[in-house]
Image 1 (tube, rainbow, N blue to C red):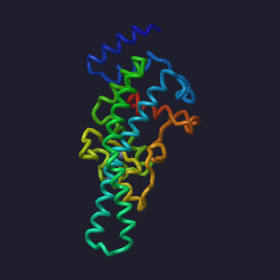
Image 2: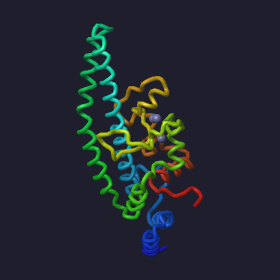
Image 3: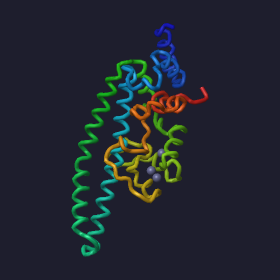
Image 4: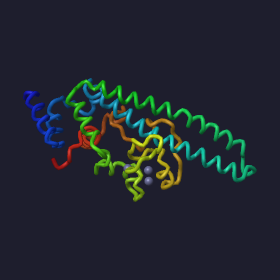
Length: 236
Ligand SMILES: [Zn+2]
Ligand SMILES: [Zn+2]
Ligand SMILES: [Zn+2]
């Protein structure tokens, strides 16, 4: 089929504000390799990298809040009763937390630039338009499927706290998102902390562009792509 026809229809529906139909015509304008080849597909690989930068950003934005809370907790403990427990351990730990905390603004700033750069590198234009149209919608990430995914991973969508709908970090009010292992509210609910400093080790984030998801169930992989890249209502 001629792609210019689909592009014409895409624009028509875009002008009319019909997001679902515009996305359907965008889907028809680029290639769809098998899920196992997504990572190596020159068209899809940049999309995977962009999404990974977004996951990393989500993790770091939550980690900054997490480190600050841990730091403040120790500080308070030391201030209330300086003689209690092993103070030298607490002081060393507090210094380590402070050091990690100080590196966060730069890490987040770099990640923001990286995400921007990776977005530019999605050279397939209909695919880029599709991703941007989806992510431009307010609260796109609060779809039924992504909320269920958050619940399955032990996140706050399975509870009534509403953390995923609110801003998580005052320093970066533009970022809302589902829980990572750095979510303080989740930590309280599960009763233990998860000591990781890299989003790639975070079992609460499922990323089918990682090598170990080569054999992801096909229906799962399609739902995943739909949730993060396309945004079609499942009924359509
Ligand atoms: Zn919560
Ligand atoms: Zn959530
Ligand atoms: Zn949470």
